[in-house]
Length: 556
Image (cartoon, helix red, strand yellow):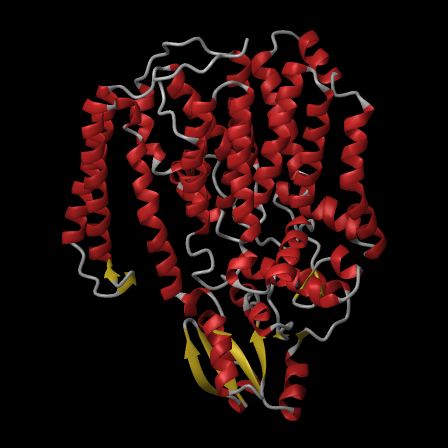
């Protein structure tokens, strides 16, 4: 049975309101801050080098800072390289793929809502998803997870519709999406897809025969042929282009990473409950609805198959990430779309927010406003964080925002309770400019854009090199438009590229001493490496000529 939409339980938002809100959230000042060091700098430089390579092999084996980099599949790089070729190199352009991926998720949620006749719930879920703090940040950062989320979401949605309607077209589309998800972030997509499907069968089927019957539906050749056509060519080409690719990619990057034995060990670990508090942050401010949700009672019939699918869609990935030895906050973005849709469906089936629930939500916002006002009064830090405001000023600003939300929610409690949750959207609208301006103000600490501009102005005749850690200055090659030589490297991301092939990128101390004798150059040294640099024999041949953020520039 497909549950029909019943008006009045949820705000019936016009679809154009959802789309305009989504586009504004992901596009606001998308290029308003520089390319960030660490992950974003890595993933911006790889597509730039693809375009600069001038040969097809450069599009098969990605290269980072001039060295082979096989940790991730190429779909994100390919799409970003196409954007760079079409629109030029800029901070906005390198973030188009994650921003577009977030909008694809919105489109899929709206489309799926129409398929299951839950359009009001899908519109609300789309708004909750795109304005959640975690998604808002990830849609504005060049990383793999937003693209993976879009492809995986399309795959599991079509897979569920295939089980419900038995139409081959859904199976074909599902496995095409799965193939794209694999090209987006590797075979972890297959694990997540299988886990969600297995969780769905576990939640829904009542016998082994039902489970085997459901699995038997996938033994049709057409979907798998399409899957192989999409997924195989790059993997085969990569194995021919780089002999070690098969072991490195399948064993080291997938199996050993999950077991916590990948070399090099450059990722975080955490307890099994690592992601639970972070889920609340990722869905914020909509997590403020939790006390309201817990007290709602169902007034409409549920659809077990739908809720089994939605629950599996976020619980199974959460379980997988929780038991994995490798932890990262950004993994959670894959959990958010179906979690938001299940919350919206639950709201609809319980009759939506009532007056008492709206008053509770308003009270929560009022209490948060009071706490922020009290906290602001105890702050004495004079430094400006964003928008020209100090810590105390920002706390007062957000306290005022919560007051506005509380007043609006309470007013709606007496006029239109079903709409009382919508004023929460004010909070991400207020957060966005603070985050953008804060990143812009800290550009010298989080990016090398200022450093490169300074070097071009003051010592354009000298080659710029890095000392030891590449990742913390990873945006440097993107802004210099060339690979950067690294002295006495301790880089995890350059580890295998340097180990596999002889190169002139990573140089040891002796080679650097030889270079010092033959040319004038500038060397970037981070604060954390300063003590080690001072112990080097060649440090006495160089003097500090500038300091920007956490880096000092030395020259001979």
